[in-house]
Length: 54
Image (cartoon, rainbow, N blue to C red; front, side, top):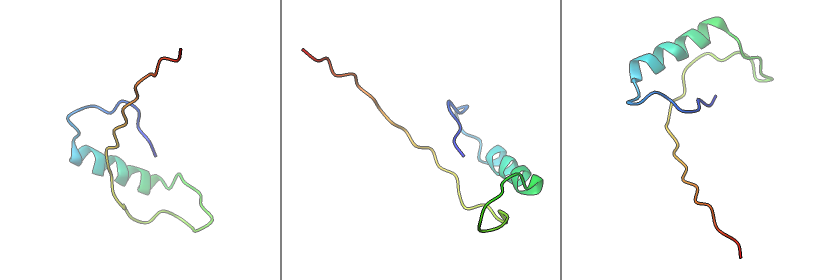
């Protein structure tokens, strides 16, 4: 799951609580079965610079 423009600074407690809510609600259906535990969370940053073409 991706979250665009997360609130910073990131609150690990809030992230964990949100993940617990997702697990409890059992909202994802996969061929491998239900999600049963949290695997991790990470922030990925990407920089883009436009290149002018002549």
